[in-house]
Amino acid sequence: MISIKNHDAVATVTFTLVPGEVMLTGEQMRYLTRVALDFQNDFSTRSVILRIASAKSSEPDESDVYLDGHQTSEADIISKLYELMCSAWRAMPQVTIAAIEVEAVGATAALTLSCDWRVLAESAGLQLSETIGDGVNYASIVPHLVGTVGHAKTLQYLILGDRVAPECALKASLVEWIAPDGLATAMAADLAQRVAARPVDEVLRQKRAVSSCKEALFQAAGLAAY
Image 1 (cartoon, rainbow, N blue to C red):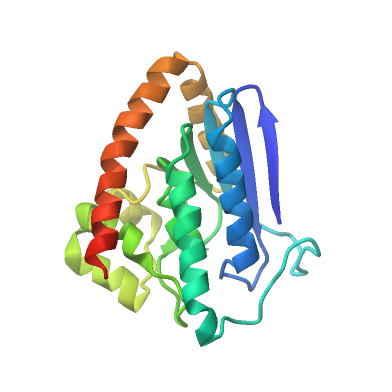
Image 2: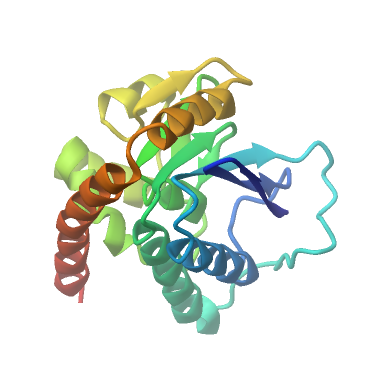
């Protein structure tokens, strides 16, 4: 389930993971892309929190579409949807903060790397690749990974799918803060309020400058992957 709440100049997008479901579906990627595109034209919102949470029930929300698995013929479609989703989130003019309350796996973990900052709960972790292939081309996050953890660790995370524990993620600059369990979203909200308190022109100018440099690296990595 995906929900959006607005409070003053801060918006919170909550993506609730159903227990047992770790792969983003095509429908979820499309919706998250539309959300990001809408925010690109929303200049009243200064900061957006992407909250990765867990559902209390194991029953899927009936408003979402869950697939049993991706067929080989769907792999290219899923990969393209993933690229569009991450690109849309990177292009948002707001400062984006991922609040990761639970294990983030595959495209969900990679989506958090499209945010500007990440707050990870102390019992959560990141796993950038799944045991069974998810049909996603992770070329767009390669420059981020190589620049922070080096080529060897990048291969380890993407090929072997090793879990990145909180302390390792912090040391590798894959996350910026670790929060006690239950407080990741509160810490992200505090950061978002601090951003909202800054002069809007200054925030937008600095975000544009950094995003332009970052996007150039992503585009270069994408071309090198083909």
